[in-house]
Amino acid sequence: MMKDGLAEVAWKALDKLQIELPSWGFANTGTRFGKFIQAGAATNIAEKFSDAAQVHAFAGACPTLALHVQWDLPRGLKDVGEVEKLSKKHGIRAGSINPNIFQNQQYKYGSLGNPDLAIRRMAIDHILQCVAIAEALKSRDVSPWFADGSNYPGTQNMRKRIVFFEEGLKEIHDALRPGQRLLVEYKPFEPAFYHTDIADWGMAYLLAKHAGPQTLVLVDTGHHYQAQNIEQIVAWLLHHEMIGGFHFNDRRYADDDLTLASIDPYQVFRIFHEIRMFEWENGTTADVAYMVDQSHNLKGKIEAMIQTVCVAQELYARAALVDHGRLATLQQECSLVDAEETLRNAFWVDVRPIVKEWRASQGLPVDPMEAFRASGYAERIAQERRENNLGTTASYA
Ligand code: RM4
Ligand code: MN
Ligand code: MN
Image (cartoon, rainbow, N blue to C red; front, side, top):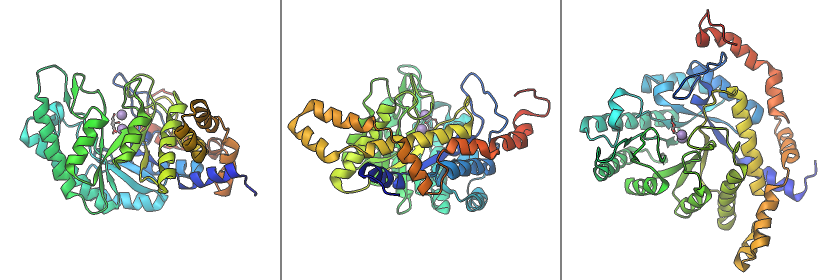
């Protein structure tokens, strides 16, 4: 089929957009207050791979699955063989390897920032084990999130903890294999409510710089204060070649893993635009890992992931449609209204027909959600997993 200029640009962008799914997004999770159990949620790593493969089959673009070591490879390196088998069976590669340095009782007062040397050692050793697992699975990124911080003023020495983090991350960096990357995620608060050791991109940036060249910053879109200009952070990190990847989700108030762009699609578009503009200016592709970090406890998990990927594809295609040459000229001239309108024009293009045609060209269903629903997979897993999720006597729907 003949494509006009816009469609061609959008198709090219869609061809290269890959989005990593989180294994934990397919399992039953909840809030601090409770869990609403879904009969069809994945109960083990095999089911997580199977569900992720469904998203990839219907929406395309998701060839990798992020793994949380403690939840998915509880025996560490011993579980690598099983993951490899599943990966082969489902055609989904293991993606980023996520350490868990926040759930064990020992981490009550922190992991890498803990005043107790033995606990810092335990956390570093766990992440070093993740580096080995990543190597065995041929995964590039090791992606820790630190819950470290304190709840009351005066209870911890913030400067000492900076040094602990510097030392720990440097040791981990130095153990990375060639080509591997350590991604440092930041979060302003929760679970600590007075101070968080890596609370913003500046702290993550400084720690990553100190650790060494294979350590980069990870931007979780939900981990920002209300008025924060996230695309400006992205611009700074691109400029310094310090952005390793994203965790995609949305939030209205604080980190709550809502579906990407459900609250503010323009913000996601603006983030994609910063990246596309950078790529256009430099004639390169930014080496950024796009990963979803969402655990839906109300929406159907697979449906929510399909929705997320489709939304990301639409917004990415719209960002690709910005007329970069014209925008650069208008910015130079300070033609404010025309520059802004150039950006807005791309945002308001309804790319859905273009994305549909692209899907057809890839052999994908033009309507992934409808095709998934028609497949009967959700009903089948609800039946098969009901007992494991709800128990035999449960009367839940
Ligand atoms: C955090 C953060 C991490 C995720 C944990 C479970 O808020 O977003 O990436 O792994 O939650
Ligand atoms: Mn995250
Ligand atoms: Mn989060």
